[in-house]
Image 1 (cartoon, rainbow, N blue to C red):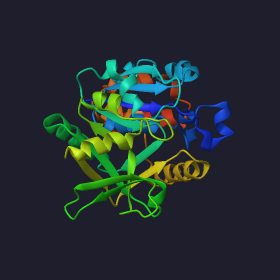
Image 2 (image 1 turned 90 degrees about the vertical axis):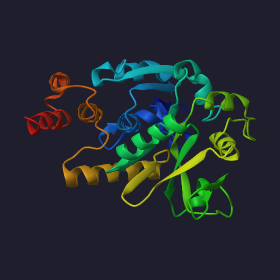
Image 3 (image 1 turned 180 degrees about the vertical axis):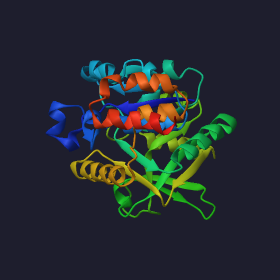
Length: 293
């Protein structure tokens, strides 16, 4: 399975911050926002990753990640010239996806949970074995602000409605999705919405009608933030700060994930710390090596 991070859009909810810097590079506590979705894909065991961004941000992402080789992954880049909807990601990324299945994650979505990697790896295996699609749900107090997943007693999806006036549940559809390879043709054939965008809800409803849409609920013990507004960005930063201060462990440390997933070895991790020794981040990475001696 391959992975796509959608890091386009205007970031209008974060103005004036996003007049100076693209949203996905704004710090969430001590790391650029895009570190969080990137580390989530890596936790799922995905090593081939496409970042879709605005043309003016391409050089910055290249400076930040390059090819990804330093953390044992392969990063490619494509440009989204205008924000034409989440589902356009599969059209832009058609050549990158090739004949593989794909996991799409939104560049402003932050996930945390002890077994998150295991849950995502299990989902990858399900898609590769059975095809179809998997969406992820999270219990929220304000479901009317999100795409809401309706389901029956067996947790089988019955409906997906975008920002309903009368939500059928408190289960919000979060910004990570897994699909089989047919998602490319599905995205090409859906009709634009009233706001002239290719909606991800339309893709999910296509799978739902075929009986091929599964729900994975992220329950107690998981955290999810859509860091696309000033308030949610602050909440996400405070959450990361609290967890890291309390546990002494970092969230979304891509070098650490690469090391523990065996994408890189001990010597490669040591090399990565050379330019970071004076920083708290670099000292943390050196500490990982000392723990495993």
